[in-house]
Length: 173
Image (cartoon, rainbow, N blue to C red; front, top):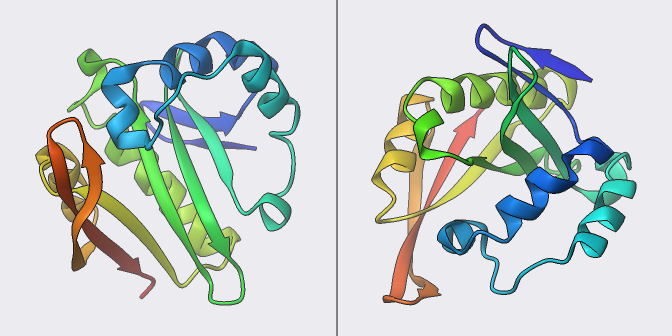
């Protein structure tokens, strides 16, 4: 499956993505965003990639690579906690290198994933959890039409102490 935009496209994970995943999952600077607290081995990530083909209805998750038009992987976008009965899922996105942020890549990836989620998976809503101090992500999801639904106080423990998390929702019109 390939979802194509103007500057990027989304595609399924491939075995050749092992090095990218290894670098991303083991980058302590993004652990706070991803909820990771320990490094991943290449062996574990290889097993993950071997099962990445499994259906969203089975594993309740869909992870896609965000690639530029030259095929370079820039980041990942996920649907998680897929709930077909209630027609909702969570969404997460990471653009690995800061040089690729604030260039419309995230917006385009989110737009493509929203279209897929609403039109193909027939979801009614998508939710996003964002740390209250993550101003760029808050701005991005607000720009993409997500509404703040609530604040989870002292939700995540970080090196700086507890932080609030904001719940955003986008409901299909």
